Each structure stands twice: as structure tokens, then as C-alpha cells.
Amino acid sequence: MPINETMVQEIVQAVLKNLDAQGQMSGENTGFAGKTAGKHGIFRDMNEAIEAAKSAQKIVRVMSMDQREKIISCIRKNIHENAEVLARMGVEETGMGNVGDKILKHHLVADKTPGTEDITTTAWSGDRGLTLIEMGPFGVIGAITPCTNPSETVLCNTIGMLAGGNTVVFNPHPQAIQTSIYAINLINEASLEAGGPDNVCVTVEKPTLETSNVMMKHKDIPLIAATGGPGVVTAVLSSGKRGIGAGAGNPPALVDETADIRKAAQDIVNGCTFDNNLPCIAEKEIVAVSTIADELMHYLVTENDCYLASKEEQDALTAVVLEGGKLNRKCVGRDARTLLAMIGVDAPANIRCIVFEGPKEHPLITTELMMPILGMVRAKDFDDAVEQAVWLEHGNRHSAHIHSKNVDNITKYAKAIDTAILVKNGPSYSAIGFGGEGFCTFTIASRTGEGLTSASTFTKRRRCVMTDSLCIR
Image (cartoon, rainbow, N blue to C red; front, side, top):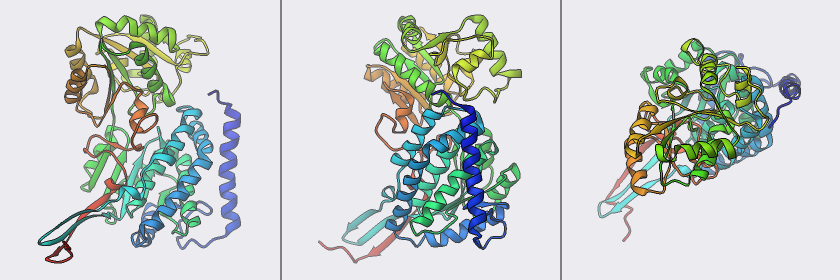
């Protein structure tokens, strides 16, 4: 979707100005000296933000499930109504992704993020009485969110955490703070509209490494959920608190000789180019069995608007996107034509993805780029393809994809790759419920083992035992 940058900037400024105007007109007494007027849940000091969330959690924890679900329903409504504004703000503020796909992602969050239905009770009844396992809240949860999916992660996390009876303190990525603030304000407005408390989720207006450290060390935060790169996840897991770590991935898409090659090419490009390859689950490279590799490349280029990069263009791209051997953040989440323009290539308007063939050690293949660049590695046979795909996934145990009609091959790959997500014969985004079954999440905790997080992830299991009673047979 083409973006009118002037229009986007005008929308963002108008939204922020409107929020400030609401605060000036309301003159509300928030009870917290450091709260930013007119923006619900936004504070100048992290300690005060945590205190506000703690006060709100005392109310949330005694609410009935119906009351919590009423708030969540209102949040869903607000997300639908603000999907385009949030999408445009995200692109304008971060310079990453595209508006059309971000709109779809926000509607997906609203429709398919689990709420209180995910909070269930297990019961055993027998001669010696009744035992229940119930899910209770942790309290105030600390959350670190990325700039790649800023508002989507804030919204998705809050729905799940609130359903479990928690409130949440966010330390968003500074590059996406205004978008995150808008989402947090939207959530608190929904809570107030539904008769709930303010500050069910909070943040600081200027998040830093220091505010993150305050949050991670605070005595009133028993659980921290980190969605981001390996560095931030490592910091959370070193905090001494219970941590849920959703880290990096480098998902390979394996294609064997039994696959529907034409469909595989279409699915891989659709998944790779969705929001300019920002989702961590997106296809980052292809491993193709040699007998079908040429056919696959043919369909990628002739039917799916891919640009086949020459050796010289690959070298030029490497120099730009891996500037000085490090990922160039200015290239992350950019579309294929923009990336090609950076190396002096004026690509046709329909180009969606850059493809090439190379060894698995090629820097554009082995590195998680988060750009619509797809390197294809040729494998001698299926076993060789599995070995190369496992190497390319780097042990992240995050996501992987396979296109095959051989059940034995799919099973062998699934056991070898051992990822939280394995998509078979479809685009990567089907893993989060977009064109596939299952719920949506933007926090996929591969490193700590929870997998796709939902409301139940953010709860404690509690056993309640009644002996020799309440068993009616």
C-alpha cells in the first residue's frame, strides 16, 4: 500500500494534539503527581507508574470474570476503531513495515487474542473429596516491548494479562514510544468506559535502560515478560525474577520434492513480505532440495514479483544492510524496492521481495534481517536440507516452515528443528491465526518454553483440596 508521508505525519500530530487537548480540558485530579495529563496510564516516573498499576490491580483481582471480559470487549472495540491510526503511527514513528499489513495485524489482535475464556479450572473428584487447580494472577507484570510490533504487542499482552487478573507496566522500545502511549491510553479509556479502573496498564513517557532496570528490580513486580532481541531477553532472565522470554528467530522454509512447488513459492513470498518481514515468525531463508530448486526459483521470480539479485547486487546489499558487519537498523522493515534503491537499482513497481541463491553461510542468509530478502540454499536431498535448516535456525527454537506432502518428512523435520512453531504448507502468518486455526499472540516465548503466550500463561496454578466432602455419587 503506497504511503503519503505528509498525510501520515498530519494524522500522528493531530492525534497527539488531541490527546494533549483532552488533558488540558479535563483538569482531572489523577491522584498521582507524576501522571501526564490527558493520557491515561502515562507517568514521568517508573516507580509511580508501578504504584498506580499496583493500586489498579487490587481492583482487578477481585473483579468477576464477566467484569474483566466486559473491559476486554471494550478494548477489542477500541482496537478495531483505531486500527488504521495505530498502523499509520507505527510506520511514521519507526519507519518500519507497511500500513496495510499493520491494519490487518491490529484487527487480528482484536479478534483472536484470547480473553477470560483461556482461564480454566481443572477438577478431580473421587472417594476422598474434591481437588481444584485454578489460575490466579501474579499481580503487577513488567513487560518490555519491541519497536517492530509496538502497539500490537502492548494490546495483545494487556488483553491476556488483564484476563488473568493482572495489571501491567510497560517499558516500550524508545523508537516506538508515541505509538505505545497511544495504545496504552486507548486501553485505559476502554477500562473506564466499561466501569473498570484506570491504569490497568501503564508506562513512562520517556522509557530508557534505567527505567527498564527500575522495573525489573522492583519488589512489586514478580513476573517480567520480554518481547525483543536476545539482549533484552538475557537481561530479563538475569534479573532474578520469573521471566518469560520471547527472543529472536531465523525461520527457515524447507521445500522438498513432494511439495506443490507453485503454491510453496506463493506462500513463502506472502509470508516473507507481510509487514516487510517484521514478524519474528516470518520466512527468513529457503532451503530447497536440489531437484526442485530451479523450479521454485522460477515461480518466485515469474509469478510472485520477486527480484533475482546478481552476485554484484548481493554484495552491494550486504554492504548496506549489514553495514560494518552489523545489522543496519535503517534497513529493517523496509520494502524491497526501497532496499534496491539503496544500491542504485530502480526496480519495477510490482517488486515485493529480493531473492538469490547462495550457501548457508552467506551473510544475507545466516543473519536474521527482518527485511524482504530471501536467500535460497540448495540441498542434495531431504536429509541434507534438514541439516542445513537446523543450522540456519541457530538453536533459537522459535519458528520454522516446511512445504511437503510426505508425512514422514514433515515428522522428521519437526523433531529435528524442535521449534515452538512449525507451519506446514502455508504462509508463516497462519501460525498466529491469520488464515490458519488457533489464537493470536505477538509474544512467542521460545527461549523459556511457554511457546505462544495467552492469558493462561500469565497466571499461577493453585491447588485447592477438600477432603472427604463435595463428592456426590
